[in-house]
Amino acid sequence: MKSNMASLKQVSPLLLPLLLIFISLFKPSHAGGIAVYWGQNGNEGSLADACNTGNYKYVNIAFLSAFGGGQTPQLNLAGHCNPSINNCNVFSDQIKGCQSRGIKVLLSLGGASGSYSLSSADDATQVANYIWNNFLGGQSSSRPLGDAVLDGVDFDIEAGSGNHWDDLARSLKGHNSQLLLAAAPQCPIPDAHLDSAIKTGLFDYVWVQFYNNPPCQYSSGNTNSLISSWNQWTSSQAKQLFLGVPASTAAAGSGFIPANDLISQVLPAIKGSSKYGGVMLWDRFNDVQTQYSDAIKGSV
Image (cartoon, rainbow, N blue to C red; front, side):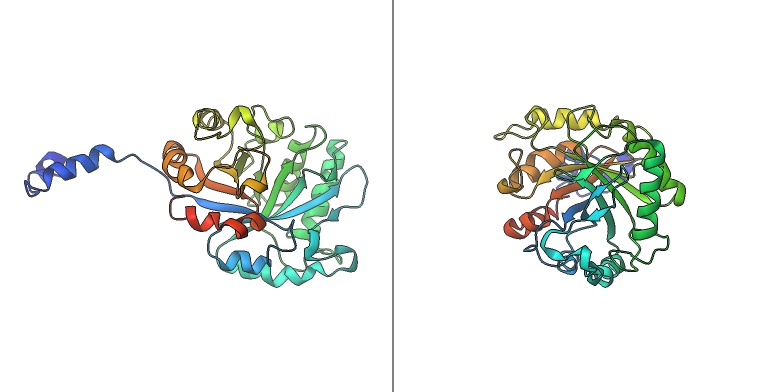
């Protein structure tokens, strides 16, 4: 095998300087995908609309907003459908259509305004059994989204305590070790709700919310706090790490990153991580308004 220098000798003298500059500028980076939350605004279009853009690799159906503590679990898809009259199963074929495009579709638990908690390890097991039978590979006569089998479960836990989410993760993986698990912690470390769960090492995707958290987010052109926090998160037990950002200024109280700044300043600083998985957007409705994913998809 010839050495690199031997190979370089065969390059035209006119091209050699340019080649050397290219080699010196090259930094290893990892191609990623875009994850998006869908379900919390009836004006965001259908699930099929979201998947048909070709912009997303992962879609989180949001939210299973009430569960645990003995209560009857409730799916809340805002203006899209009403689970109480069983008309959310209209999305079954759309889920299958997304999956046929290679898109992973997950059920998101929690949210910022849900009514949920886990009172014990046994409670976590009961919730896992419900999710498995009603949304995943199990059997139930009352599957809210019909017979479509989702690819996994996302933990967007923003209320209550941090207790027993690790038990829920273990119980879900106990049904099927290939089940995808995702988590959406806030960027301050440790996350108040999901720290123990993430430490199980069972989470395939961790899309960290780098917004509404001034100590660890982008602010007025300054990326230092965000990148410093990202570098800390790379030491977590997440298998893949995603940069969670709002898709518009209206999508969050703070932390919006203009697409040009994301592409030129943030992504080059984080894509070198072996854990880099891509970008998570909150949410589909805001992305429709700004076309944020269109602007960044070629750089993620």
